Image (cartoon, rainbow, N blue to C red; front, side, top):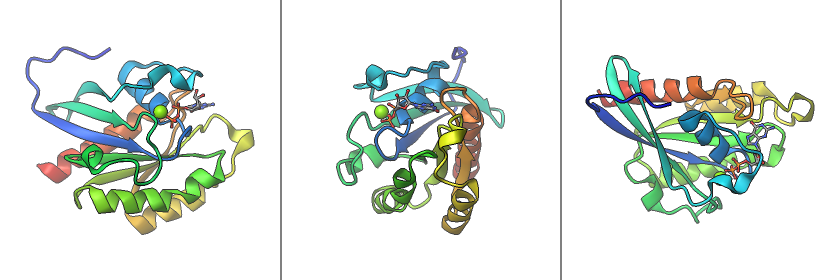
Length: 177
Ligand code: GDP
Ligand code: MG
């Protein structure tokens, strides 16, 4: 549950992007409401969710945007990226193709978003260890080369979801302060 704060110091817009079905909406739902659903339709139509938390002594309202079904390159409009200070670029560790497409999503981000945007690469569905198609080392190397933060998460178990957002928000706070 979100804590009621007297005063919001900053509102940070964060966008979530990546191929369809990688778990973007469920990561968001896990972070904002601590909920998970196997029904991928459950969050369609939700534009963004918010969560307020304290980072480095400041009350930060994270306003996190979900593509809600428009997740093909170029279908995501520049309005979606406008004003975004952070991005979660999500692939599915059990779908090689979703990782291969990360470079294209990065191109889209760099074309539309502010150049100072903080980007976190997320390998989701970390609970499906037996179905892994993307090695962590490959993602780490890619992230290092591209200057991205990286984390493997599971929206199902919740593992690393909050810490990934907190790392992103801390870095945004560092960049904008
Ligand atoms: P989106 O299209 O990227 O928003 O993907 P969704 O959040 O709708 O998730 C697609 C499907 O993957 C749904 O059936 C989810 O329940 C499932 N899913 C999402 N995250 C995880 C995860 O971490 N582990 C597992 N096992 N399934 C997940
Ligand atoms: Mg979705």
